[in-house]
Image 1 (cartoon, rainbow, N blue to C red):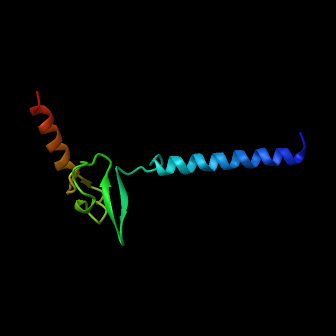
Image 2: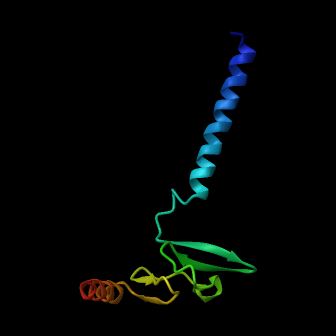
Image 3: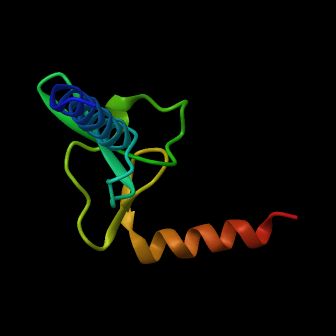
Length: 95
């Protein structure tokens, strides 16, 4: 194999690796937060991963939640402690 062919295959391998990282990033693989910033014109809305699909993007907050807050699937920002207690209450009530 000539030197020119080696460079060609190394270049193709580099492009494939870069494309793999770009795909993983676009799918949210490197996002440690439970929400995603969605561009909506001149501003962003912060949408949780478990959002209700029946709620429009414009109903979600335009500011990031604080360290002790969480965005509900319907778009409200509540304290994590209240959200966890509300979720465990509804889970125990279901048969």
